[in-house]
Every structure is written in structure tokens, then in C-alpha cells.
Image 1 (cartoon, rainbow, N blue to C red):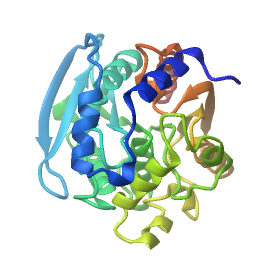
Image 2: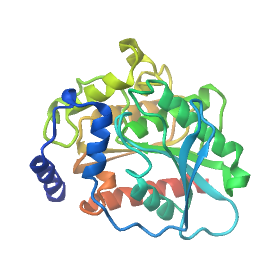
Image 3: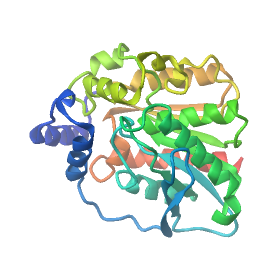
Image 4: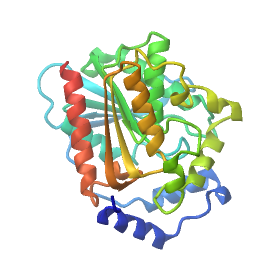
Length: 311
């Protein structure tokens, strides 16, 4: 399908701004530049937002807790959300709008996790933070007013990777029983040779060289790329993990690995929904102000979460 006209406008604007060669950028400087490029948008009304710190493997771990506008009675289902950003950039603010939208649309609390970033904290720091936060939610469900039996994990891009890995860790370590995993254009493998990587290597928001740069900073050693807690597509089996929703974008180098992960989940007997959004680019979920298909994807993700929580 041709590039969505709204996605093309986004790409044209980014081209005009000029994107530097990632290999010339210091990660800390890049974070500052990315924050400066964020476009302020009206805050979506929400029932309540609370920033706090919880115990983490590397020290206090910042989280942001969202209560939906229509809270209802009794304990709420809850989504542990992990932001994208290639394990190197991103924070609670970068995905604030997405978390607000999901909380309201899914009728659940959302706990957004500000996990440690690379290269200051290499693999598996981010994965351990996200798993620890998920365990903390389950263990403190009563105080949080949420229902530990209706606990899901989710994220986009690197956050989708961390959600998939958290689901694997929960199975392997006999941790919290998860109701669902929401994987939005997830990073599923440390490989750069799929057709979607070749087709979308340049010009579609997430260049292949940027992904190489992200992985370079995330992994301590090259052989860590084969670790299933870094590349969940390489897990020996996916049987027994939580049911999944996988969302991919047509013009995204990560498209094929996300769809391959969905196919492996299905072959392992894991109930899985896969939807490719045609015409759009990596990162589109957070572009609801300018790309209509983002609103459809949020609505779909929320509907999938509602169904999982209901069952």
C-alpha cells in the first residue's frame, strides 16, 4: 500500500529538521535533542496521575501510575507499560499521551516504568527493571487498588521487546500470572537482514543504522544477541507465555520480526492477534494528533486488553 499521506507529512517534517548520523552522537546528547524535538500536545484528561519510586534491582525505580477517567467500582485491571526508544532514549514523558489514552480506552490502571537506559546500564538491566516492576505491581495490588489477577504487560518498540521478555521471565521464574501481553512493533531479534529491514532501511523514521546503534549500546557483548531475554524470537519455546496482541507497521524495519514473533506464539499454542497497519511508519502509535490510524490502533489495543481482562 502507498505511504499514508499523514505519515508522509510526518516524514517530510523530520527530513526538514535533519537527522544526524547516529554513530556521531553521544547517547546523553541525543536524549536531550530528542526531548527538545517533542511537540507539546494538550494533555488527555485522566482520573489521576501519580509519580513515585519503587524498589528496583539497580536502586529506586521511577514509575508513573495512571488511573482512568472512568474508574468504576472495585479493583481495576492494570497494565505495566514499558516505553520505546531503542533501550537508549525515551522516558515517562515521551509516552505520557499513549499511557493516558490506553488507561482511558481500556478502563485500566497503567503503571509506566522508567527503566534504566543503555549504555549506562547495559542488558539485562532494562529487562530486570521491567520484570521487577511487574512483580511489584502484583505484590502491592491491594495498596494500588488493582487486581493482580488482571495484570498485563505492554510496550512499543524496545518496550515491546521488554514486554515480551517480561512475559518470558514470568513463565521461566514462575512469577506473576499475566493476563495479556501487548506488543506494538516490538524489537524481537538482534538481526538486520529481514525483507522489512532491507525495504525500509532509510527514509521511514527508524533507519537500520539507528537500530544497529541502539543494539550496540544495549548489549555488553555481541554474543548477548542470542540470549532470548534480549532477542525473544530466539527463545527455544514460547509455550506457556501470556496471550498476545501484536501490532506492526508496514513501513517499519521491525515489521517482519514482530510478525515472525506472532507466528511463533501461534505455533506454540498461545492465543495471539496480529494486525499490520498498512501505510504507516514505526512509532505511529504515539502520533494520534497527526495520524488517524494511531487512534484506530489505540482503540484496537484497548479492546484486546478489555477482552483479556474480562476473561
